[in-house]
Length: 419
Ligand code: AMP
Ligand code: GLY
Image (tube, rainbow, N blue to C red; front, side, top):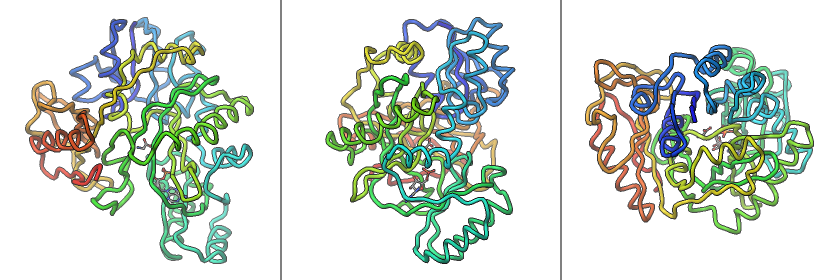
């Protein structure tokens, strides 16, 4: 099979590493990829949002499967465009990707189909939103931009001042562009968070092993929300009983709801859950593999990912072989100093081998570039240093030992992943 992966982060590197294990693979490309991915696949200089560019490349290079990993091209209809040309693609169509691309759509869907989630109200006018916040006078209040915002469109305001600043910056200053023309005010929930990625062909849903992200920038869950600073799998809070409850009250009802809406979801559906004292609630859906969840989930997959993706596309997932390792996995993200705000790029990374790896771990490259054989930083999240172990402690120990061998100026990572 000739395979093209769309994207260029740590998630895509993890997908590529797993796809490379398949005996069915012939050629592997990644658009645009990054410095580390270039060691595992042929990188092609096409932007993830360049739909005609991707379609044309796939046609001219006899690509058998395009794996669309990031949210923007899914929301923009890349899968629809590929299918229209008879090219097989893994990922939801545009109408199904709305489950992530619009918080208003996903909240209304959950309300209509009684899928447990935080209570909410939608606003298109900042003054009305602020009046509501003053009336309720209950903090923290959760404020979400309707559209895509690189994982940064959620503010948990502890008082009115913070809430007002968030509402005005989203709706008036448009810091997330049109994503902030509508906002959702949400009830604040508490409890451990769980990420469950699931394969689905629109008929059945096959959850992958669970994981836990660490979204805040600093130790002790302090600092700004980021795309994710590290992950572990399995998630220790997610037991079998909870998994069954989530299947019955969340996973299956979501698949059925999307079918009832005439938007069958095919691909990887990400359930961001909170295990509240009143039971599991959906915090968010993503229409794709999570980043950095993929970096701890896929290393535990023992079956052929290309077979599974084929089964999803052909709607025969129910019978597909999907086996998981009982090992634990941990991923520590090494980020550029300053991330998620301003940071520098182009800083040399020391301690990586020529392949961009270190002994005892797998290094997924998130934001690196190759220059004259040397790896340079080229993004906010730079590396996802990942290890497997018989226990979580062993996996964490290996991952942190590998991290200690890698240096770049300003490198920042959390020291409490999995703690
Ligand atoms: P999201 O991008 O929707 O996953 O939100 C980012 C983070 O904000 C989540 O991982 C939660 O930690 C937090 N969050 C989002 N919604 C809520 C909520 N209703 N109650 C409490 N925390 C929330
Ligand atoms: N790690 C959270 C996400 O992928 O959105």
